[in-house]
Length: 124
Image (cartoon, rainbow, N blue to C red; front, side, top):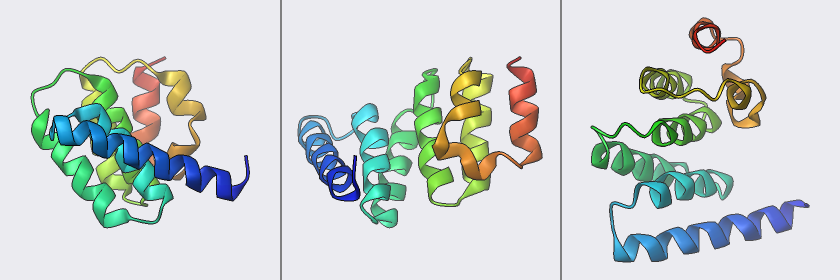
């Protein structure tokens, strides 16, 4: 896939997320996945806002995919502490995606962080 195609897919992802959010402004999956597409489109403030809405909406959620997807967005934005915080919550809630964490390019900026290594060790 070339850059133009990736941007087109990201635009389509945001468009679809916005449609879901019209029906349910607190649709967690639309917020977190849409935030990832917003990062790709160069809209970091909007991506942060959508992540914040997802976290606030699902503060008591046991769904580790919420925290994982949020961690990916924060990591892509270079906000390593926020990304690590989200991953730690996910691991505490049962996130067991060690292979994903090892190979997900979204998390490349976290690989040298001691907290990241500690989380991976917990998942071995």
